[in-house]
Length: 255
Picture (cartoon, rainbow, N blue to C red):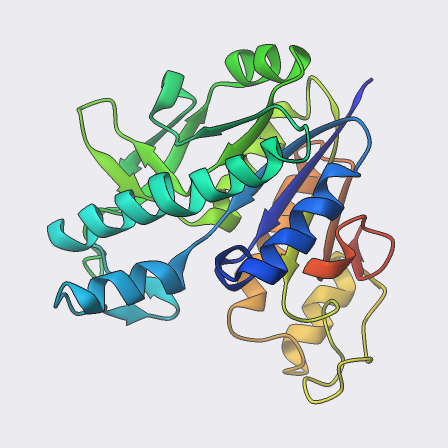
């Protein structure tokens, strides 16, 4: 089966010119088929502030009311996405920037209100693997913004980690998929104050133990749960690493 690498990068890296340029250079050197999934939260927060719109977060997740939805749609689907596409075109990479609404590639449903009303936030229900794989096989490099749609005419703000994971799972039947989550640390750390204490491999049992010992906590728990879910659905390998190491040779491998 042909290899496909899906890279998910967080906001800060794609929002600063120097780190973005380095990231795109590294990304362009990855061999074979590839997809880039990006965030953009800091830029959205900055623009919201300039427009006098308050940003509200719960556990790192953005509460998306009507005004905030307009901001994230402009920033994720426009500014950040098109900056990445233009940067890749400069490196002779035939990139196409998409949201989940384009070509109906990712449909979601508005998150139901339980304890918290997240507003216009989507939970992914369906990824159109046929359309994606057709584009990929035509040599198109897809740059995916963290927005989906509900097929009722509404755009929904959607977690970029989840989008990367769901896209990887959907394409696992068609490609040999490797999913790389990039963030500011070198991997999952044994000691959060020691950047070099990277745990090289984590399996299901180790994960349970690390959570019980309080070593893995906060936002890293859902990240790892996403990773194990992807592996169980046929994704070959999931790596959590620093954005400067997107070739995936270092970091934490989820097995």
